[in-house]
Length: 602
Image (cartoon, rainbow, N blue to C red; front, side, top):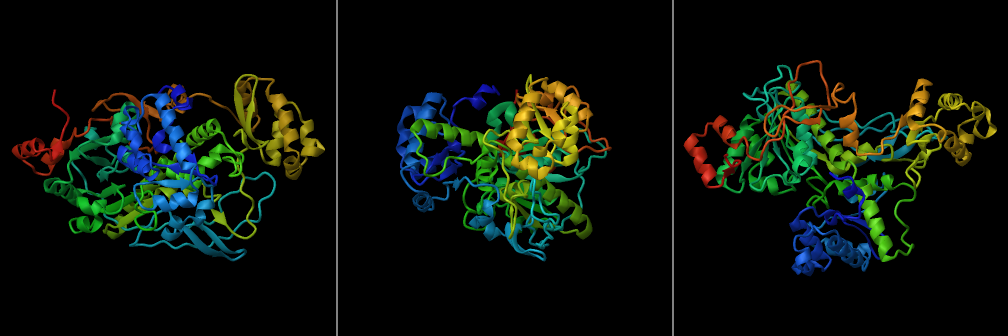
């Protein structure tokens, strides 16, 4: 993707950030025409879809038109208070809106309180605390939230850390893996892949859950991606969307048809894992709810990778990565400083647009991938547990909780808790010895918060006098004089190139790295060590491959074979039905009637 498109003022209308009349910034999450129409209807702007230039919203190709529609949305949201909008949005479960919050504030969010993701416990040395509940909900083996022994109040420049005791995660029950006849997407067996013989059914679109099953595919699981007739919407993004479909078999089937439901239920009889991200009620309508499938396969591990959860006041509402970024505080943490303007600060239309764009950029981080890691970890724990019990069970992860865990040092409240620490408004860092500095050429990041590290830094930069300077003699003095210290270091670092500083300081035992100012993918794919260390590798020649792709997240001494490439939607529809025992004539009939689909034959 052209990097200029990421920094230009091209609004992502489906992820609009807007301020209410009383100054509350809201994150909307309307990532489909149907959801966006509901949003427009809720704010009395549905009529704009009658204009030719907005007819395809939220996808508006012309940037000027997109900015014009954003201006309408910002003006309309600014006409009412957050309380007024909340009451209005409550009438339509397809409208998603959340206020931007700081990390930790979601401990009071009604949905997290309802699900137990915000839990109360008792710490012997402190008393009542509120922190995060277990990462995965396992009704068959519920976890226990234990109170930790908390550290003393943090002083100096130590970054507040998570308490030493982490809430215990339930060990779920499950079933032993059953061998399957083929590897993922036709890739030959690696012989000893970590999840060889495990079959995963994926009923999910977009990013978080498909990425979770992709992580399982990287470890050798056979993942069958069950797609609707219109296919996963990420496929429309070309190679950008490959990472969520690669290494998987694809079955395109209409689950609204009885024959379609029978196909996937027969697949579930043979599967080890089923993962989905549908909103509550949808699995029942499609015939893939847990009670239905458990009756056919008691060993099935059934994961609902939810956004908000299966119950609670927000359970029926849509949510995407920006929702988690707003609720859990990742966006404001990325914004730095004091976050968005205070409610009493007047903003012009142009300033509103700039802040909307800025908060959108701050919220384009990694909530989907945080949720994917949690979901994949839950599945692997369940696979381990079923080796001991022989029984499957239902589990649930939630995107909100997964992202709270990535910011867990902030998600704890107790009497005497240290103030939460965030970056400065320029996003340089947390303090003078944990931040970015401009070098003579480029930038460096330095981390030298401890006394020993600071002394090494002073000697390495040729200023040993700073280590004995009374202003900086210990952590408390460095805190009170950090602006002066930052000015001293700024002058020093400008004297040499970033590469020189990285070499010199790392040789002296000081954590220092040259900052890369381009796209992460370009840096990683161009790095000379990338392929040697497994960060990138060539895919297998199936489907769209071979091509260079990200490597496995986990490496093993076992031979695991080449990673699969992306294939077309429905590329394995015919072969999967043949495995289930359908005749060629029966398959042709299902294709002809639109129950299943496959790519057009050449």
